[in-house]
Image (cartoon, rainbow, N blue to C red):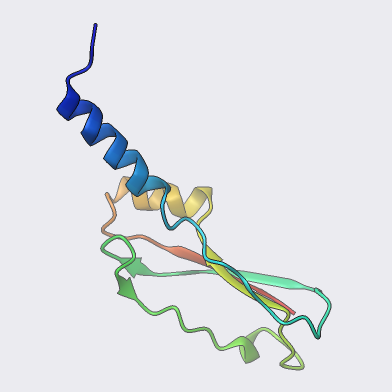
Length: 97
């Protein structure tokens, strides 16, 4: 049985949307070696279009020397986003110092 072309196009488009934007490129400072890592959830809404991604790294880093900052999703944030159909789309922020 062949799948209708419009259904196939819709399926491929949906998979492309789901697979895009899963993780951002981490910002690394090569002057420092990686050490401890801190992560936390940040609230975003409407598929990540609304929310604040600014991070005050002084909250986590004792000396202010940051090796890496990255933001993305994991299984928990993806599950919450799926259950709420993208209305609430949390992201995970990782800070390594």
